[in-house]
Length: 251
Ligand code: APR
Image 1 (tube, protein in one colour):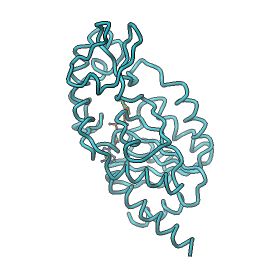
Image 2 (cartoon, protein in one colour; image 1 turned 30 degrees about the vertical axis):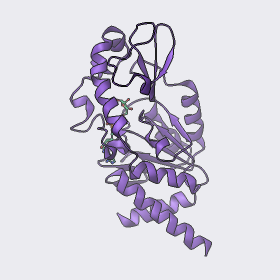
Image 3 (cartoon, helix red, strand yellow; image 1 turned 90 degrees about the vertical axis):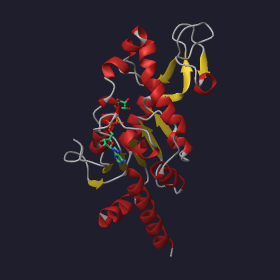
Image 4 (cartoon, protein in one colour; image 1 turned 60 degrees about the horizontal axis):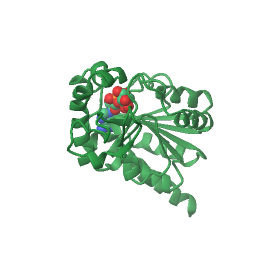
């Protein structure tokens, strides 16, 4: 594994535009379960019943049972070594943008500034009826949270059946087309359109480095270097290797 880490550090060190695509796997070590692993959220809640916009409109109280569980986990969560390491790579000028599918704000809390949120962010709520917005903090422990107009509020996350924010979509495809390296971390890459980013990057000549506990459909198709293991451990090892290479170059 160490020689793959060193190889990845060389690839990143020589890149002028490095993009990352992250998924729920990078937040598992912060105590937030992913969706499709054996103990993932979808083993407990059917996404068609709990994560589709039609389900939310029809049965918001029921959907808030799941959302409340996620809320409690996210509000207790702290950035882990994966988030902190990616923030450090950004500060070192070795990681330029992160496209995340996560809604937990942990990349930003881990120091990353250039974050594109594909599926929104759970820290704000909106009223689908009157359009008012609120901070989730201002409605903490009120379940389901209600607007001043009386209706049940929706978190500003993208449910199945809703569109990805247009600016996130266009900016991510633009970056994927120009990236020299794409770091894919903690995602099963089964949800569109985020899962088209690796193919776009590959088609435009990027090297693909994949970090995951297990192989995905990307591993044997577009991945150039597969770093198998926990994102926290691998990303902090990668940061150390990049630092060593940068130090060697500056001598
Ligand atoms: N380190 C690295 N990888 C991990 C770790 C870890 N500690 N823990 C889990 N993984 C891997 C899993 O093996 C899996 O391949 O992370 C991946 C998580 O995949 P999913 O659970 O499918 O999550 P994600 O890819 O982010 O899902 C995309 O689907 O349900 C929607 O909106 C939801 O944003 C989510 C989207």
